Image (cartoon, rainbow, N blue to C red):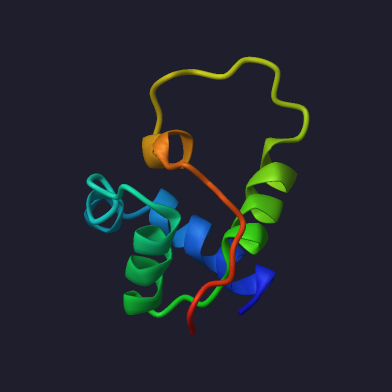
Length: 83
């Protein structure tokens, strides 16, 4: 699991609507991580949060729309994730 994998994931999902569509119905961090693993990425919720935080530095205005609405709607609780 790695921050590098989370970074690659965010870059890929930003450019692939079909990939984003797989996460529309996600209801939990575990489900989110499971789909990410199925797509070949390996990271924890903590690692994903770290990458999102880095990419969000300096952002003042947040829109309610965007390419990753599920990042805002999933209840992100840090806990161990299966490999």
